[in-house]
Image 1 (cartoon, rainbow, N blue to C red):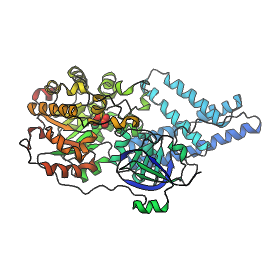
Image 2: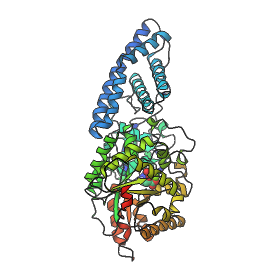
Image 3: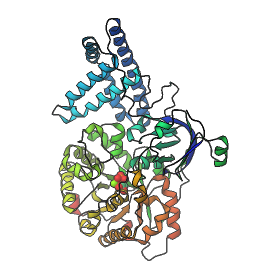
Image 4: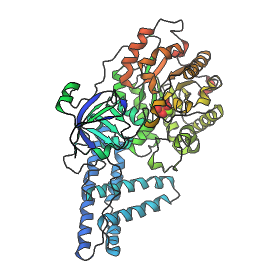
Length: 560
Ligand code: PEP
Ligand code: MG
């Protein structure tokens, strides 16, 4: 392999610099399975390989279970218990062995065929829960094939010394939420991906963890291998393969550096800076930064990471813990915003040609009362003694908001509860343009500038090819923002902005001029925004605006 310095230019996704070796992730690693025919003693050898693979895969599953339980929680770890039980079921081994004998197949082919058949059968059953278990079979198959192919699960490393991203730069086609479970995110020093836009959820995740990242590097996986030395600059998008000692010295980088969380900055009177939380672990930074609340709790991320739905009780425990940890500050729980790039594979949703305009957000929840119900009930249970804010994603118009709210109210009818506020995400232009009408029924709202930019300017947020056009800073955008702020002021209700640009100090002045007095940003960005806003405060007559305080819910809303 080449080792002279090579410079590439990509799309900067997350700030920071790093120099380290590559940990290569390759999702298509089983596309070239060894397939051969066996007979006689070959059959016994293949059966023995299967038995060994099952026992190693079971051991690995146990290790993952322990790790996930420690890192994320017991409920999430249960999925691996279930997988281990299926894996160790004698019926599975018997079926694979029969296949090897009857069809004279090698271990890989037999495993592939048997588990594909199982999966197909489950997908044909008319029971949602059973269909969702089908993805476990795919996962078991991959784990067995990993063992047989001497591959580490998920990562392409063939070496037992693989560090699973620890102190490494992870290179992947795309950074998916499920990859984040498999690698050591807390100690990964960088991400390089072939594809992915500036506001893809992967980029948001990297920024919230302070991990430098660059995307837009097509073909990168063919140019590097595990262990290739790379230097990346998440400010400029420059990536250097095999950097010389001189280049590294000139760049004056600390090796293997992760961007540290900044020092907290005290709250600013009259301007609330809340936190966007993607998982339970983000709470730590949120509290450390003394956020004024949680302005966006992306509840669907936990499902992505766990690979399954949670029960009402599990959700209640989680949400109650978040509310408690925030000691009376507002927590805006967004209902599951599923779909588009947040496809939950275990839900078996149909493939769509154009998923960002398809079955997602509010639309999906309207068709999946089962998913909505347990979440709504868990949130309602949290409302005893705490005001609960429920944020409805991707609302298009008043009729849609009413229908979804009616479903939530119906789901929680029998639950003793306290104050519940129902709010809207302004991220579809049709809703933003009728903010005044929507505020008649919504108790609060939050602007999702990530999707609003995508839909207002017809530019894909996940596509690095069009990232130069993903640019909201245009007069029409600020006019729209001012219109929404005005509607909020007239209604005397909260309006916050929770998209990524709210965390960029360069836009603080424009948001303030548009009448915004509340934002919600990645926790690590809180100090920068507070500094920028503090310097601007007192410069106009609306500096202590009524929109700082959410309006109390009416009696009617409480009864609903
Ligand atoms: C947004 O669209 O701006 C938003 C905050 O939601 P998400 O990024 O989760 O789609
Ligand atoms: Mg959105």
